[in-house]
Image (cartoon, rainbow, N blue to C red; front, side, top):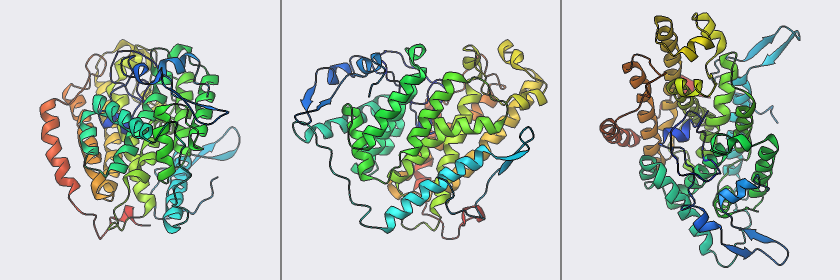
Length: 436
């Protein structure tokens, strides 16, 4: 799928694709850095970190040329909803944990991490500062560059981030850029040259980044972010796992498999972002429920991407639709490649759109619980991206040759509505599904 986030390769092209989920919903168009944008800034910058090691500021294109060298069992919540818990494994005669249960364990872990850090002032102390070469203005420059990237390719979301506190907005920019670069590994112009070994090196580079040893300027912004906010490395690693999945997998036999993929490439972004966006001090929602809503937004956006880009993916030999549900609808891969809108296809798409809207409904329950300064861009992304499903219906479910998109006029009309919703305070009496 083509967009999970930024590709770390140099190219002037831009397009939209279906692997970004949450970030894509913010208007995160595929960012393929041009030499003008990156090499100009990082290719010639060199400075010492200390006498033994040099702190590297390199262009992304050069970096990619050399392949980016660089527990469960937490508390459970019986009232927390799950769509499914276990799957039968007839061949092994055992009960296997479903993808949703696996992801739910991650949600619990992330929520638990934040609660632990918030309850201990000592744990909230900022990690040792990154020792930047020269002077600290380079870190400010790194964040500014992330902001420029966001403003260039995610205009609507960028405007929303300006309502956040300076610290939060810069952190969100840094997360956005890292995610986009990660997506570019498997969906960029040089994707055919990316190997599992290259992904392993990118993951090693991530680990270095979390330990305060960034490889380049854009890494430095994220390294500083994870030092200041209770952001865990697991969702970042899971996103890389989603990229690995794209290298070797182009079919999904059922929704359980597809759900896990959607979590990897899109739901992870929600888990990365919640610690930065923050939860309203007036919210009575549980931390777990807010994380679950962020996850649902990522899943819903990714499902929308998949439905919007059926034709585009088919031309690349990929089908991101549950194979068993296609068969139940009397359809097969051959029908997808033929690209004809039939009654069978319409009925199939209606059921898929219904599921995506269900996840949007779950996501809405948590947006109001976010910090007041973070709600507007999230509401805007949710309302705008949800309208893509309406456009698919308006196109008579033809996602083979038509690309559903929301017009500028509709986007402009949605922004005041999103802003109005962002002003609604957290509800004191929570819906049943939000209680723990």
